[in-house]
Each structure stands twice: as C-alpha cells, then as structure tokens.
Length: 388
Image (cartoon, rainbow, N blue to C red; front, side, top):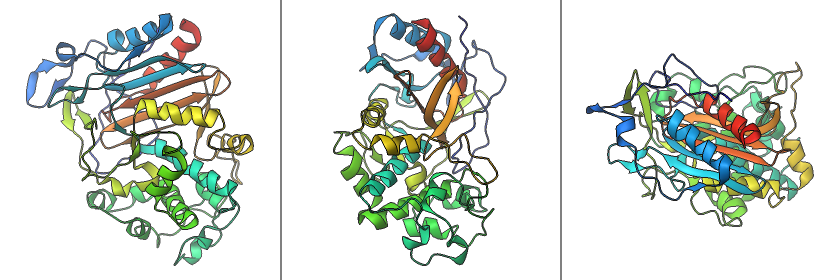
C-alpha cells in the first residue's frame, strides 16, 4: 500500500485566516525545513523525545511509522481511535521551535473552525431544553437587529444559508483582528453590510454565522459563551484542557503557531482570539477532542434525533449545501462516510474526522498553518481501514 506524503504550502501572511480548503505546492519528502535564525539546522536533526504517547498494536505502529518516517516535517499531535480504543496519540516535533519544547498528546492548539461543532452542539442543547427554536428568527435574540436580517433563522446560521457576508473577508478585517473586541463590536463590524443573497437561497460558508450563534447562545442561556461552554459540555465531561483562548492567560502546554515562507519557518502573525469567538476561538488537545467525540457518539450531550439532524445535509433552495450539516462538514472519504470539521487560523491547521459507521476517529492538530494536511489525513484513513 502506498501512502501519501504531505507538502509545505506557501501562503501570504494574513492577520486573520480562517479557512477550510486544502492547499498544495511542489515539494519532495526529502526536503528539510530551516528555522529563522538557525538556517543550518534542519528538522530531521532536532527531532525531540516524545512524551505522553500511546502507540497500540500493529496498526498503531503503522500509523506512527507513517508520520515519523515518511513525514518527518509534520509538526503537531495526532490521535487515531477505533471501536473505543486509542491506537495512536502522540506529538511530533515542536510546540515551541525557539525553546525546543516538544509537542505531545497534551499540547494545546488553537482548534480554529472545530469550534463550530461545539457552538452547534450548544445550540442544539438549548433547543432540547426549549430555550431555542431552530426555525425561529435570529432577531428574536439580537437587539438592534437590522431590517435585512429579519428573515434569517437559527437554522440558516447553522447551515451557512443566511446570506450574511463573512466578516473575515471584509476590508480592514486583518488590521482589526490584532485588537481585542467584544462580541458586540465583532457583530457591529458586519451588521451594516448588505446580504450576499436572500436567506435560504444558497449555501455560502461564512464565519459571521457562528459569531451570531455565539450571541444567540449568550442571550438564550443567560451566560457568556465561555461560561455556557463550561457548564454544558466541559464540566460534565471532565474536560480540563479545552476552552476559549485569551491572550493574557498563562496557559500551560500551549503551542506557538508558525507559518512557512518558502522553506523558512516563521512566527505566525499576531491575532487577538476575541475576534474568532464562537466561530474559531477555542483551544484544545487531541485527547479532549476525543472525549467530546465519544460523548456525542454515546448520547451524553444530545439525543439521537438531534444528532442525526446535525449530521444531515440541509440543502438551500438552489440545491447547494449538501456537504454541510448543522456545524459539521459531511463527506465520503476512501469509501467511508465522514462527519467532521477542518480549519485553519494564524499558525494552525486542524482536522476532526468522525467515521460513524466504522467507529473510527481521526484528530490532527498542527501548529504550522501552511502544512497541507489532506494527504496525511488520507493516508491515516487508508492505514486504519486497510492496513491493520
């Protein structure tokens, strides 16, 4: 079986980058990576000792060998589980390249758009409690709601069919993202923008939808978003290494984020995470994300009916949107149904894949934003389904 190697991808430096699509560039598996200020040092020569790792059985060893031997440039943490057993949970290369602090299974990463499944789950929990109506209007929960938003429903926001433009693409968004913002000021940054289309007409991925859902959660629950996250999900599941990221907080085991310019590793541009909020503002570990995954699978957070609704495509009037449910990307990969989410934000690329019929979970968190992680994910799938 032939597995794929990943490639470095050169991207322009942006202050706020939240994206879903994979990128690629020409590169070979034998290339090395230089660190700014250490041009003579390459990644193969400074591989750290790993800690807190699980490598279980033949399949776990195949997975580990694929990363360690075939993809020595990968920087991040990976967890792969099947039927409730963790096959691989391990960090590779450095959480901090300047201090040579190794990544481990305990390293905390910005999880970017994997925040959206958490936000969607909290919306569904409030709906189960009768505090939200998915068919209800956004403006019932939002003061000073503009006339153009009057027909937008909670379901439109969850499924990216609202027509609200993505605030991260608006003029001045990059500059504004360097400063701290309240929820109100983030909403105000796009509240006067015209809709890109009438609500429900078509599908268009927009981070603004999940910013608005965060505001809805706060109004419906009577708590701040981070407080309700803790009360509804984190505390009941004893999840301790996940939360909303605040720059001023001293956070043990937090990974620094990087990008690649050419063949040179550089620090990612600064981003105040208050700008990402309920769309992409969380941090987590591979282990905590697995606990979240298993809690959903076991029905600890939502009933089966609402889970199936989340994992079902809600098509827009023009038929688009079949690849997105309620906070989850929907696809078939290597012949297996996949429910998950990917994302990227300054310094980080992330992926959570749940293969519900197979009992398989793949979680990949990287602290180099410009890694093309799709070939790695594809090969991890092939190994866990066919290689062991």
